[in-house]
Amino acid sequence: MKVSPYRRLESEPLDDLKVLLQGHVFHVSQLDSLPQILADGLIRSNQDRSLPSAFGYLENGYFRNRGCVSLFDYRPEPTETISERRGRCSPFQAADPETGGIAIFILKPLAYDALVPWTRWQDEGAWSEMVVPHVEAGYPTAIPLDLVAEVITLELREDPDSLMAKHRRIRNRLANEVPDNG
Image 1 (cartoon, rainbow, N blue to C red):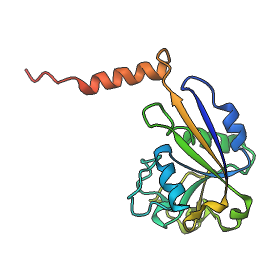
Image 2 (cartoon, rainbow, N blue to C red):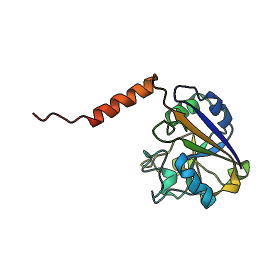
Image 3 (cartoon, rainbow, N blue to C red):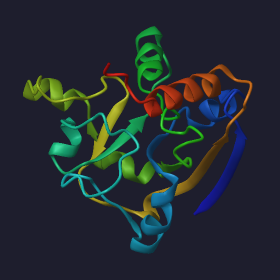
Image 4 (tube, rainbow, N blue to C red):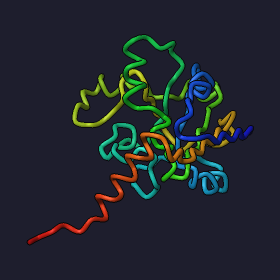
């Protein structure tokens, strides 16, 4: 399995990585989970919520609730709808300087036959559960690492002059202020 590390400033574009991901199916984890995944030899589902999540807002995720490993499915060419959905749920949104980075596990095509498409959510009418239409897929069991072609690690360093860094400083300052109750 090939490991490809990328490090850059948070203000630098990620277009080259978007191009690398096009045409593939992949899983995204926090970078600090990589050693455990490598030791286990598996990418596990997080049905019991015992693992840290790169996308914690998916508390009621369709695939998680079924014990599947959630994946990004970038095999289709991006139409306007697909591009809009990918923009709303980017694999890079969990990679900011405060998180320590992400690991992107690109699956081998051999794994594709077992994928559960997002349309299963639609077929079941599971409207109360979360899924990213046109982007998300699931793998029905833990994924053995022999089904992973490559791991891309991405670490973003803070660019002190970036708008994102300025926003973080303001947010952190506000979070640390003591309210005046008088």
